[in-house]
Amino acid sequence: MPRKHVISYALAIFPVLAALPAAAQDEWVGQVTPYIWAIGVNGNFTPFTGAPNLSFSRSFSESREDVDGAFFLSGFARKDRLVMLADVSYSSSSREGHIPPGISAEGELKQRSMTLAAGWRVLQEKSWALDVLAGARHWNIKSSVNAGEVFGASVEKTFTDPILAMRSNIQLAPRWSTIAYLDVGGFGVGSEHTVQALLTANYQINDSFFLSAGYRWLDFDYRDDGTKLDWNMQGPILGLSWRF
Image 1 (cartoon, one colour):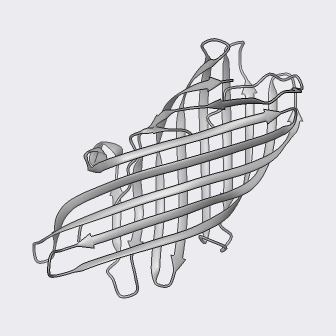
Image 2: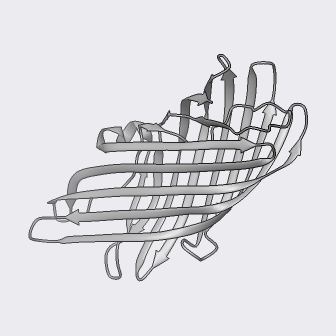
C-alpha cells in the first residue's frame, strides 16, 4: 500500500507577525501574509479498524512532486491590547505505488483546517510584547486508497481542537524583529493532543510590507472509531506581510 503524506509547497499564512509599534493603539491594525512553506511529513495512519497501519517519513525534496494543490491564508489584528488571529489552510496530495505482492495502488489525502483565536497583550515593553490567546482549530481530513478490484477504502474525519497559545514579539533593531509562537491543544476533545511552534525573523521593507523567514512545526495525534492519525509536519517558511 502506498505511503501517505501531506506536503504543502504553496502560498500560505500563519501568524508570522512583524513587530507592531509598542505604543497603545486606539485604532485596529491588521496584516495578512502569503508565504511558502516547504513541509516534510512523518507519522502513522490507520484509516479504520482492521486496515493496515501506514507509516510515512518524507522530506520536502522527496515528496514535492506529489502535491496536487495547497493554499493557506491567515490574518492578524490588534487594537490596544486586544489581539485576534485567523488561519485557513488547504492541501491535497496523491501518490501511486504498489502493495504486496506488487499490485498497483493509488492513495489520496486532502486536509482543510481553520484556526480562530483571540487574546490579550499581557506584556508591552518598548521592544518586547507578549500575547496570550485561546481559540480552536477545526479540521476536515479525507483519505482514500484504491487498488483496483483488489482493495478500496476511504475515510473522512471532522473534528475541532481547543487551543491555548502564546506569541512573543521582540524588536531587535529599527527594521528587524523576531516572532516566537506556540500553541497546544486537543486535550482529548478533538484530537488527543496537538502542538504547534513557529519562529521567524522579520525585516521591515517600508511602512506596509515586511519580509519574513523562519521555521514552522505542527504535530497532532487523532484517534476515533478505529481511525488513527499521528502527524508531524515541519519545514522552513518564507513570507511577505502586508500591514494595513
